[in-house]
Amino acid sequence: MEMSAILKPEAVRVISSASSKKRLLQELADTAASVYGIDAGSAVIALQERENLGPTGVGKGVALPHARVAGLNEVVGVFVSLEKPIDFSSVDKQPVDLAFALFAPSDAGVEHLKALARVSRALRDADRCTKLRSNKLPSTLYTIITEEATLNAA
Image (cartoon, rainbow, N blue to C red; front, top):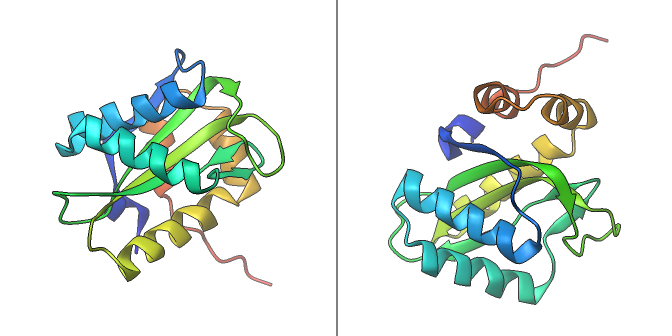
């Protein structure tokens, strides 16, 4: 599954106003609503319910919030770069400045997990995260986040 199948260019944002985890989740839901037609209220509630099960801050400044939302036909994503890192109750206690939210259909099974694994792999790449942090233009961020990993010759 390629990133470009999950993420639309207009679902990539740079956010300066998110001052808390709750506010970030709202921004992610609002973006999903405007880009994919998801109900923002349902999306933010689903994200918050998932966070209540355990934080999705995976460490090194990255969060991967995700939720199942009624009315979707496919897994979709929203990527944000935060100008000011926020506390996200991450596993390593570090603040988050990169977040990739996934929204999946209510009945999604393996597709949701494949998408989550794909996004997780991409954002574990330290070089990619460095590039993401050094760019603040949404179109450039989209290019960086969707570029497929290249194999290095030995």
